[in-house]
Length: 418
Image (cartoon, rainbow, N blue to C red; front, side, top):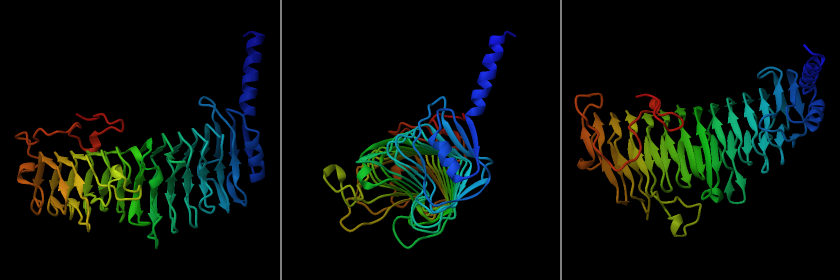
């Protein structure tokens, strides 16, 4: 090997080694962060650290050379005390990995002006009121974390934005949300995506492959207050709180499992709800009864009348209530709702609709062993065993999504099983 090649390898190894720094105090950690360049790896030695001031990150990595700040071992470095990690503008391409956070809530933040930052394989158990993790910047990722034991007002994760624009292209996936006892007020959702002032802005974000168990901070579990989200392939189990499309339009909800939970409540326009599984829910699907029409000038805080919503190819099993709409004094009801090609087996009546319910389309649904059709018109269903394959029992209907179970829907929306 030529001397030049040896020299190049030696220098490459030296540079790689110098990019990795191990520290054993929060002051040394902050200094290492302040001096970090793209590709730096900063390791905090295992132990318990008490933070009295936020650990501020404003450095800029790159897509190919992110700046990584990680615990020596997964869960081995614990940040306790009154403060935590604060990502501030212009931080970009930052990875925070493997920490245990037991500091006060509302001290893990991704401010406006940050981007392409990631929290991964961390454990959040932050006491007191406020958010465990607050997201404002665009293009952020939250994955493979555990959020648990929150017994105070606030959310495990809250997504905001800037002005009237919700944060965009957020990816929240493969997280575990566990144990959120009920609170005495509004503002304790498990995951809140937006606020009413953001509701007409498009997020183009994805929430997928998350598991929610025993979460009951308030009546809303997941509260969506933004437009154009994809929420797919999640499991919500034994949570006495409801997934609510509270404000906003054009979200796609598919491939999710709802088990022993109050299911899904819908407000807003042009949503597609398909290939979800609802079992032992009360109810499974609640089509909201609007008290205002935002398109006609109602305030953004209104319960926007559901219009042009597609509910298709879902499986509903042994729910005490299946598809319902509750009454509302002077309610506007819902318009142009398509309920097609769903399988409803066991439980209460297939549909209980208070109205007004204008221009509704019912087609191709299968009922089996339910307590009657309820409000579903006879033309909208067939009573037959859904496991009987001797004949084609799904009629054609004005829908544009395939007949799939959650297990058959890939999280790119494609069929993964024939």
